[in-house]
Length: 172
Image 1 (cartoon, rainbow, N blue to C red):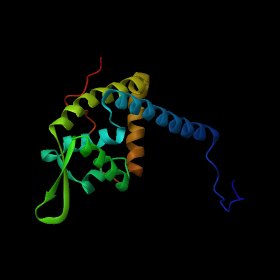
Image 2 (cartoon, rainbow, N blue to C red):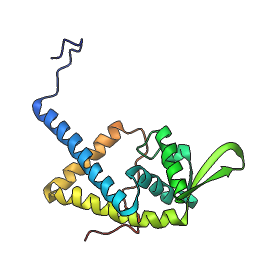
Image 3 (tube, rainbow, N blue to C red):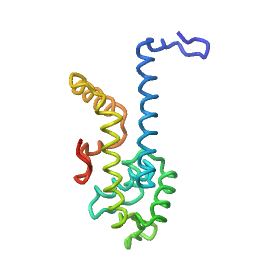
């Protein structure tokens, strides 16, 4: 028990601690590799890819910043910088909302959609190479149930569609 710091809760057992550590390190390594792949192929970061994907999935490929923030893994202040860079690259454009002087919507441009198509192929390939190829058939269902339960227990956002965009690469 950890009583020095005033905490009387028992630490997780060693096997649970190893599992947690392995999850954290593998998550970081996989995101690093996928980010490197995206950067090399398209110049995008994972956060930029995530924003373009949310816009692609939205009606008329347009969302308010607050709506984007609900579905991406970036802080709101970080999101503003991500959108700024995407706009500078011509991948998105900001639109004023006529009914709300302070309102701004972000729209995916044709160039952004083209970049997203390439990035989605790279992203799908990364998921396959760095994750799904390593899951044995006897593990797949149990992992799916576990991660769905984990997400449901801790997520503050609505689940995002699990399908890759229609233009994403299929497994080779």
